[in-house]
Length: 236
Image (tube, rainbow, N blue to C red):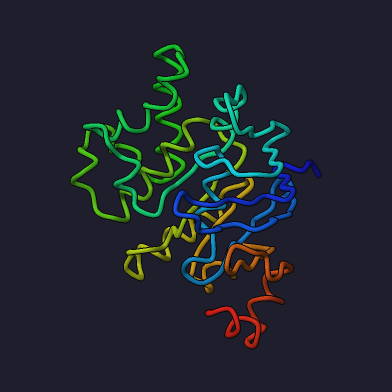
């Protein structure tokens, strides 16, 4: 299988001097479902934000064979087409008046023909079970509906990788079950950071445990999630 994410000695410090990532090394293969777990402040979100170049630290990072550079990254547009990022709070992702406008925003910025944009919006909404919502106002939707539309905004770019930050946060039990069922249907590579260990166990085949910016352990999901001592030692 192809390696779609390659990380070598990745470190990152925030402007206040906080060392958020320390010498992260990993490989993620095409089609894998990776769970990133760890306590608050472990570096999970910081790591995810490197995968499409929102943050750029020291070390080497390749996404779909493209180098994520530190300055004037010529690959950035292609990387962001390949990596669909879904934020924890869908309000951070939905800022246009209607659902159609939100889902069309990415393809529109690729200067695609109008017919192709409409096709991508329709396909993306169908994939998340939100067909017929094109004319609805995004800000009036429920949290669960907003999360699905946020996923559709990523799918409209035809990504090879979907990256989720706490996808089940703030969902009621019914919406949470529906979202997990939806994510099980996706065939592309998934990288999911979450405190929801039950969800991680249902969706992911491999888990990477972070704490204080370092990888404490990685391995099969069932092996790590059943290691009570390991989880307790790392605030889980």
